[in-house]
Image (cartoon, rainbow, N blue to C red):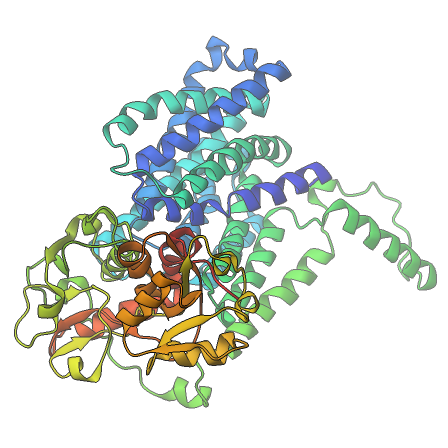
Length: 617
């Protein structure tokens, strides 16, 4: 591969590794899959039409002879895969979507049996493709539970992968002479026209959040416009089979984003998968290094040869053609990387078990199927019934509509439902007053989310899941006061603070803020509010949920200066009927959301700076 090809390969691998995260953000925000596809495609089409026109490469792509092939390409590469991937990510994690898309090179080899003899994977290329695909599986692992929703999501992604495999072959055989900018500009324009009717029929039911809008912009500008142009250039350099090897690198980018954004912790399987992917990708692209590295290695071999000359006589026959020349580093690196990956996979462990041998020797318990969707004990069969109070206030719910998925607790409820295998349309909301939610007796809901603190007294009458939220502390001040401009905890040291006696807020104030003067202490929350209104104190310290209530309903012209972590905050859990068989399943779902970083993401989105509660450090 040339330097140009390696540059395009690196760029496209990155640009097509990040969409899964942004697609997930958008569809979880409620953006319909077809509308999301239309928005990113139309944005990219406008940009590429301008670029192609200015470069003078648009006219050849508009030739009548190319029309049917451009239409076919637009359908199989864009109109099909884009909505399918977005629809699939409604039901499966973004990392799993990336893994399934990694089947594209294998599908290219399969389609080549019928459509493109030159792209058939044989010999070392076939071995490399197989090794790379095995590495992708080891990287994150397939986790389809068997529920109909997850199977639908996986099938949608695999169908998209078929389109991604066929698209490059169309370019290579029928459209290879066109400039990538002109080709992609016309293809995206065709796709925009084809997707418009469906997008008009399924618009968003609410204004997308800032995160969702930003995701659409990134998907349109970078992951579609820029990536398609670079991908077209890459196909022209190395052919469709080798070009689609980017699908082995893209999951690495997806996992890296999981670590950086979601707090995921790759284990030994991920390390082994990474090594296998490197070996497989390298073998399937002819086992050549980037030109700069190759030149340095050649000079090093030349110096070594001068010191230690070969004992073999010089060959005077014609050299072996380059296409069949065996790179001596190829089998060497493959022989190192593949056993290393197997060694890591064998020796590594994602568990903290003190005895790997004992664990391996112990018989595996039968799989627990009690939390599979079909086996759940529900109030209404095939439907998850979730309760909350009415009216439902922000930032926990938006527009008093729990079913719209907006607001922290609404988003958490739908995330739990998804972990259990329920689509949003299978979740039904019902009204349950706060005080009656934890009364003893049977319940008309499967679980309730309503800022309900877990307490020993309540736990005697109802069940709670593991906590999905632990309340931090917050500082509230009048908007026109000096304290309202504080940006850090240090800025509050000389502030006259008020706090209720006997609360975790008092402990947090003295231990974390450490004000220069003792905070003023009040007997109850009403006295705290009165002191803030009358100016007896510059600011008050309460937990964050109380701060939202103060600024939203009790104290006019006040603001949350910021929030900060402190021990002892109230923990909220999903409330269930006492001894409910569903309790361990809800707790398991919460555990998965916590370990994946999804709970933190939802908390940051709905309870952080965007909600008017920036973090104070």
